[in-house]
Length: 337
Image 1 (cartoon, one colour):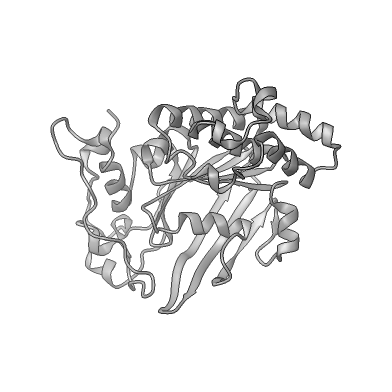
Image 2: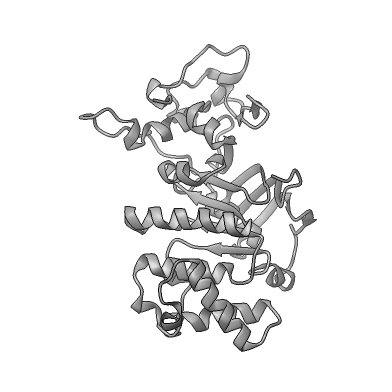
């Protein structure tokens, strides 16, 4: 890994103007991504994962506001880039794959032409060279008989193959960073595993950096180098995948891991985190997870915890790590078997 981050978010906060007031969607997030690294951002729906990723590509609606913080891509501050500058970055430096491939694909246009047009938009090549590159990309993402399928519309492809085609479009212009927003959620388990293996293979072949967004920790365990756990717009725990999965320190992370089928004893019901995330029109003054946290301390309801450092790479925002807090061990089911 290279020490200089290819992507860095510094104290980033994003809000939305709504008829009912300002919603704080992302709150003081600090993250970094190295070249060739896969960073997974996990958490329940509505925790701010997608907003965070779309803020980097400037894909948020006009009602959004960057309240404070900075976004650096390859060392350059793009926080306040206008649309014209962002068009030069999208595709060539930053690219994104969404959950539903049909939000990206045009159902009336052959797959090959869609990939070709993406290449022509970002690279100075002839149409014939772009076509050759498109066929290469179909091969890279594992589409059999790419020359024949080049001329087929999306409805000739299965869900997994469509997602591979979307990956081909996203990778066609050699971006440095790929954002994958729940790219396997709508796929069955077998196809899901193939897409994850494909992402790992592409990372190894191209050196691309990937931000992988998911609510499924089982999927994240298979692919991530580093994990950031988000709750109520904040990163509450961050570390290597090994640290977050086998030495989790935040009670919210304990809850997420405890809800995994692999953590459940045979014959028992799946565990869940009781309660609901807070409404971010009026965030609580202390730890937003406190009302759902059976280990909450009195201070959790009054004061937001700082980010405590556990190791050089592992951090968590919980008062349980304060030297004055009682010793609380995570549930035994979360330990390595």
